[in-house]
Length: 291
Image (cartoon, rainbow, N blue to C red; front, side, top):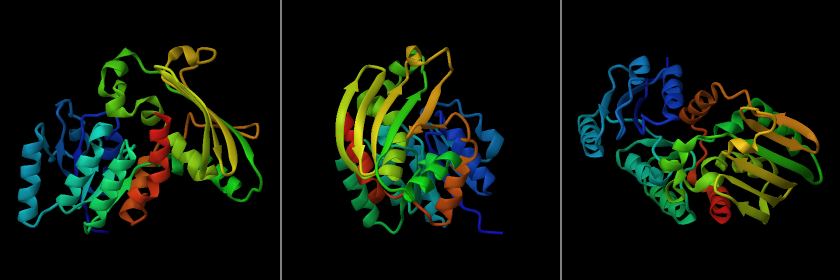
C-alpha cells in the first residue's frame, strides 16, 4: 500500500469542500487539520473525525507550524477559500513545506499569477489547479475528436446554472472577490475551450449583464458563441439547468458525469500529473480580458 499522505484544508465550510474531502478519503489519505471562518463543518465527522478544526487562521498556522517542527508536517494543503484569497493561501502552503491543491480559479489577475509562478519557482514544492471537467468522459471524447480533425469548427456554449438571491450578497456576487460570472461560473468552460480548440486568437464580442454574460471568441480551431448565466429567466421550458456544448451541430450535454471527477484529479496530482500555474497564463489572461 502506498504511503498515507497528510492533508490540511482551508475553506472546509464552503460549497465545494465536500468534494475534496470525499476525494482525499476515497484515495486513502487523511486530513489532519481544517480551517474556515464559519463553523458549520460537521461533515468532517463523515470522513476525518480526528481532524483538528480552526476558525482563526493564526491558530491554524500555529498548529501546522508545530506539526512541521516536530517532524509531522503536511504533504498537501488544499485551498477551497474564496477566489480572491487563493494566491495568498497557495503561498502559505508552500511556506509550510507542502504541495498545494487549489480550487478554480487559481487566481483572478495575470499579475497574481506571475507572483505565484515566482513563489513556486523559489520553492521545493508545487501548486496544482483543480479543473476537473477535463476528465469528464464526454469532454475527453470531444478532445480526442478535435485533436484528429482539420479545419475550423462552429461551437456554441450554453451554461446556465441558476442561483438565488443569496449569491448576489455573498462573496460570489462581489466581482472583486469572485471575478464575476465569467470567472466564477465560466472558468471551467473557458479552460475547456482553450484546451480543446485553442489557443485564443481574439475576443470578437462581449456583453456583460448583472447575472448573464455572453460573447464570441475566435480560437485556433473554432469560432465560439457562448452564454453563461445564473438567471432563472434564461432557462428554456422550465429546465433546472442547461449545460451544453454544441460542436458543428452535435450536442454534448454536461448535465451528468460529474461524480468522481475530483477523485480522478487527486489521483493524478498525487501521481505527479499537475495543471501548474505556468500552464494557466492564457486562461487567466482571457478571464481578465473578459472582465
